Length: 433
Image (tube, rainbow, N blue to C red; front, side, top):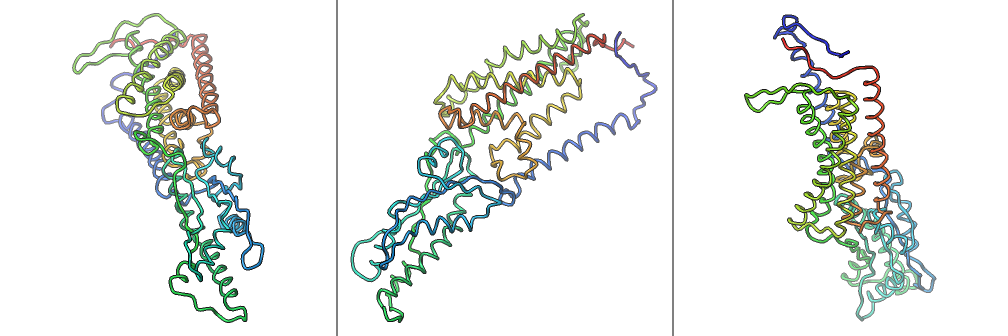
């Protein structure tokens, strides 16, 4: 029994709204969703900052300034904890080893490090304002993490320009007051040289430097994102091409080459066996495409330190996306093309975290990243390309989520097409008129 509904030509006149209204509505709604998703996450990322992870390391051992035990590093540490908005930043007070570990695995976007001799250098710097001698400004280092993306580095630079500027002003006033007390114990105001006043007004040198900089050929940290897009397109677009060409070869859909129209006789094959055939083609094509991607990348000078790992994971991800996309089309028919487009591309790009971090996009999009395939694949590709394939940098998470997605795709395809076959909802072309 074929589930075919035939429509007489005269019941579908050219001017009927059914011909043009439905496609126009679908396209308009799709483009409205696309515009909302893409523009909402890129128009003003700073406005949407939330839970942005930053490490704060205070190594200062303190010193005696003006006869009093002093630890300026701790004062700055406490001030930063209070001043940096908790609703926007996840400020993690860590030791230096743990901070480096989190930088090396992409767990934080940067780190503020106060050195162990910070207070001692401040005391020497203040004394040098009134007595001769060589001196250097005490330094706080702000490490950016370019392997997590360029936007994170910009946020760390903003922290250095705002929060640490306030700390600089506060420490400058304290040093000026301490020096005045030392020079005028009776309570008067010492007359400091103009250059000394200027230097004491901003005694801390804030240095912004990348932690473990990226090598050349990485597009400033964008190659991982675009490689991810290539993998998703290979799975999604490849599945659509395979679906159309296999259906045409089996006689379930016509093939057109310019003015030539070919519709092969349909082959008596079940929906489930047809899906098995498409899955097999997808699985065989995935390693070929993964190899092509790697070859083009190396030809263009992109550094790939773990080529075998990248090849294996790319093949795995392309297969998972392709299998799931084919299952959706087999279950939903033509509507499956639209569902795949929304699932893998329209919702995937804004929630991938590849260009703008998840902590800088609207929270509903951040929620999408929990299950969107593009984000999971991006974490895996980024870990392989930038973090030496470290599992804790996102590769383990990506592998499990990719496997979970593949299993869902397999189950959907098996259950739905098996159900259609049991109900004898076979695929058959409309009778020739």
